[in-house]
Amino acid sequence: MLSLFKVKLPKITIKYGKLLDPIFVFYCKNKQDLKKQGWNDWVPPAQEKIKQRIYDYRQEWGKSEEKILRGMCNILDMKFKRNIIDVYIVSGSSRQLSDPIVIKSGFKPNEFVDSLTHELIHKLFEDNIKKFPIMILKEMFPNETDTTRNHVITHSVLKYIYLDVLKDKSRLERNLEVSRKHRTNDYARAWEIVEERGYVELIKLLKTKIKRGLSVY
Image (cartoon, rainbow, N blue to C red; front, side, top):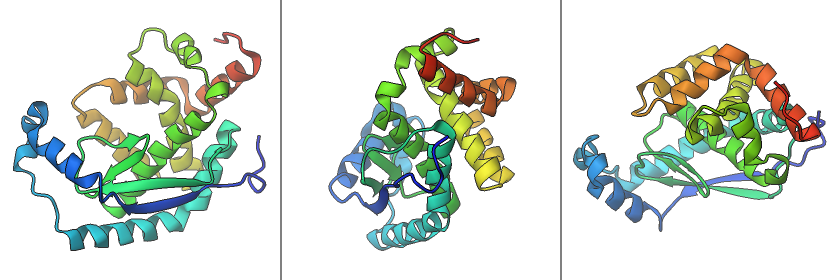
């Protein structure tokens, strides 16, 4: 495993996505399938409210930033290749993005931390793509959708962060509930696999495959 203390961590900058925000607002209120989800009735928050939420997000993230970043690097034996990671907050978004990281302002502070942690795990994989070939996921989960197979390991790392790093089972329970309510079954299915096969075992299997370049079942 990587040393918890030697890994250089990136600076996470949480800011208002001033140029992105109008695009996301227009998209949410005008895309047809989002209208069916009620976004056409959504009212974007006032600027002052967004600024307050961003302040609250920064404060909440700062409480556990180092533990979370070191935790994901350590359990995956990976490190970030960038010094700064920008996180853009927009008024609203039907989904959160990892490239670039874009997160809606509608989250409560602790929910924001969970969402950011999720996207940063994707970012960590992106920085280590040569060590994390997509074919490995296809070998590990051949009968699953792309979205499901792309989230099994992400969810495994999240469970590790929730239980072993933050020691907060309520975060795991909240994430499971949100996934069950998602309009597709892909995220809930990823959690089912994590529960069936074990988060520690899945992470170990992934690292074995990366190291050996072999199929290990």
